[in-house]
Image 1: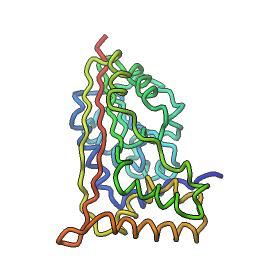
Image 2: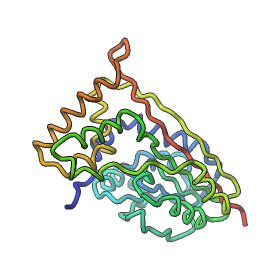
Image 3: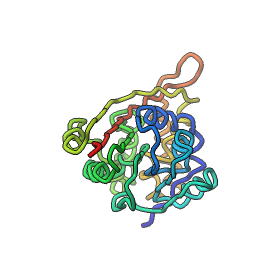
Image 4: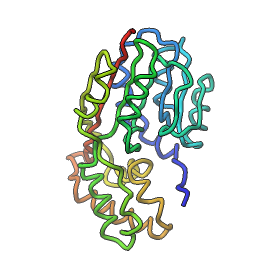
Length: 259
């Protein structure tokens, strides 16, 4: 069964929160005047827009597997070049100075090998900058699996969850032989959201999507009802009525040597 395309409008409901990690990642990229810059998994162009603002003289490109996301990105940045491609098999068509990837590689099972290949493909002195959610141990994602395993849809959703990220040392060991410099760190964000329904809305366009796509309309509504109740029980409200969605993310900045 072909899964529905990604929903750009739903994704952008939390644009500021989703763009914060991209801004934090970009702040650690040291390239002063890159000529060729590409945003892998560019989505609706919110992260690509940051790259264009940082380097207005560079040729900016974006790549995504979602036609809906690319349509939104092209409206947002008509001067940039956007491509439809599968990141698992995509090969760079030139030597990029910066390859940027905000929250996309967590979906690819063997992505450390892809990251190594991309680092090797960079122009001398180029930078590979990657950010990935590392939140599968958080209640928001554990409860997806719990609801999936407890319902009539258990067999269909058995493989819906993505794999956990490898250990940080695995990334280091894979990239270090071809990197002049590697910086790896975690940041734990705490997003103040208006109740459990807001958490469900947040993850519906990302982590929850593989759980919802195989279900029919009635099942989907039932799954969301059960998941929302579980989220409400797991996240106590702050005094102002909001809840804090803790969101760990892994960051990797690897620079290729000059020669």
